[in-house]
Length: 389
Image (cartoon, rainbow, N blue to C red; front, side):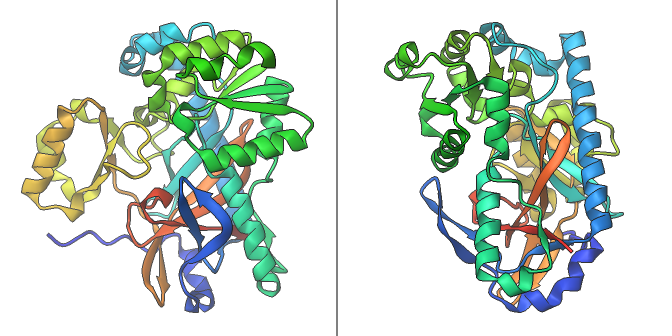
């Protein structure tokens, strides 16, 4: 089977070939993520003023529509998303409900017309804030002449921390199972202390760890772990929230459903590629449109378990989809989108765009690039900082 080529979109990226003579990757000094060195591109992703305006407007539309969709799901109550997470909702019911997400990191690709499409909302644990800011600073320090007339679009290093302090108060508990996100949490605690507040990281599944709450007297809890982890320790998370007076970010709705890709099926079709729960899609339809489909686990994966239809024979695709239908983890079928194609001396790279959002506003951007069309830092990808011309 001949793979369906990904178009060179959006067109503006092809105008920076002079940067592409540099080696594609290099380590970012001092950055380690889950015991792995993080790499970044030696050249930036350049975005013009009018393009940036388009992306910020798009982000605001996604935020508003996601809030609308979540509100409608709560009103219906019997939606498959809520039935799937029902036990955890009841355990976490003491937490403050809220339809406004605390933040989002939108992972974007493009449709055939070059319009942005959101592939994931990342509203429970939007990783990359600290890494993106550090990577932009490091690149500016080492490439001052090239970047002197450009404006970095990385989020402020303390933007995330300031929002937590504003919402949760001066003594914050960061609940993270099994020490997930060690690097990012270390940076976040440092930023919270720099603002005159304090933060305590604990594992809500560890009673000894939770005993520290008695003397800390927390004012709020931030859940910073993969959403699927909630199902592993919902009672522990619920107890931590209760001891924090029911003040939590994100709310149970966004903690559980915000990153489930099935939520995308409730958004305006203009904002996202067609995304359907696998169990609701006829197998003949999936087979017919195989080259233009992507199969994904419904919840956070860091690239694991994602299958691109065009990379498999029809018999392989049939077997993959049949296994996914009976898997414990729900799957979605999503239309294939386009990525940026970047030509380098080291070979062809694929790139996406990520938007960081707080209170419905885009506060920064970054990008990830990889020789693998499943673009993810967890799959040997690299960061590419975004700059405005």
